[in-house]
Amino acid sequence: MTPKLKRTVIAWLLLAPLIVVTIFPFAVMFLTAVKPRTEVLTPAWWPSEFRWSNFADMWVATGFGQALLNSLYVSALATIGAILISVPAAYAMSRFRFAGYGAFRQFLLISQMISPIVLVLGLFRLMAAWGLVESTTALGFIYMAFNVAFTVWMLQSYFDT
Image: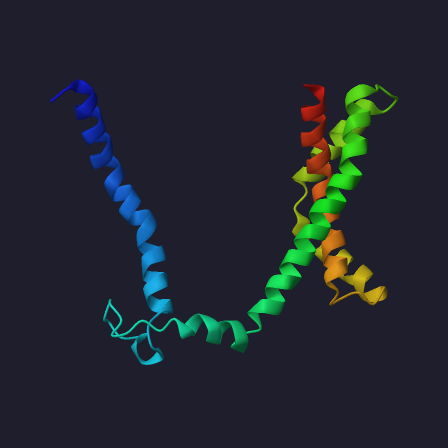
């Protein structure tokens, strides 16, 4: 056995348990998802029949389609908004030195250290006053605001190179 083959075999022997531990929960989740309802809580590992209709039933019964669209909308709004705001700010910080440059960078860094949960009560009261409590657009703007500081910080590093 060559040294390279020996190293490969040893690496696979060491990685195999890790792969099994990583994949096992996904396999259990998948097998449970395709089982008939009567078999979900039984100790049998393998389903008596594969019910692919469970996925369609879940999609309709839980309103998953609308929830997915809401998530995509909020994510797109937050991402696009954060980039549109952050690119000019990061470019200006990268190319120009202005009064308060260091303080602004410190502000960006410190704002990332604040836990968002601290702001929840104030944000809820603000959104309630504006009538936006159950608005996906308001949620997108909140996510965008939380991500602007990080995006400016990362894009400034990119523009500096």
